[in-house]
Length: 68
Image 1 (spheres, rainbow, N blue to C red):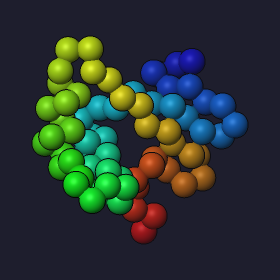
Image 2 (cartoon, rainbow, N blue to C red):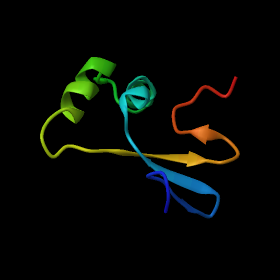
Image 3 (cartoon, rainbow, N blue to C red):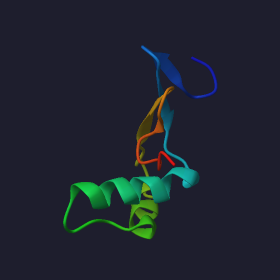
């Protein structure tokens, strides 16, 4: 693995960073009625020991990305 991502079967696993927070909030809103907003997710990820990953499909982009 290089650059903090792993690729397997055309998908890349990437650590969550500040640029991912808005996409994660949009994805959370699609999944839950009581969705967390971007600042809430950022606060959670800023806690000691907290981490997250996103999966990027090479053909479609990162989860939560708008295809347009």
